[in-house]
Length: 184
Image (cartoon, rainbow, N blue to C red; front, side):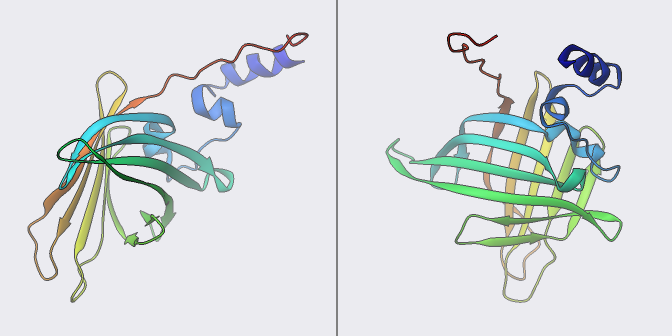
């Protein structure tokens, strides 16, 4: 029976993360399918030093949302550990476009606009508000199963964005655990 299910999934084109989770993305989120899976990020630049970490994009809510979970380790410009943080971001279709809500437990960013190049890139941005900075977050697929990530901020009342952090994520290779005695 198991072999039949795998053969059926392969014949329907359900491979990779979709097969692992048994879920597919809605039509509105399908252009972001390149993000689904686990990613590892070697050290990238930040305003204060470097950051490295891991991310996972999972299909949620019956394919109607993508959930990004991150763990980031921060280092100073001198290479000393400066802390770590967990982050989440929910990406969802609404009003004919894609939106996203980010939180690291201390900050919340509501991305209300997006520019999508299907299967290649997505840029999320906030709407300028009086007295508040504006943010922009870009994911761009690169050769070698990598994604470039760039997080930018414009000061309150300003339109010139400055890069706060940037780096690359490489698709993480799934580790197979050896079965226990008696497992197949």
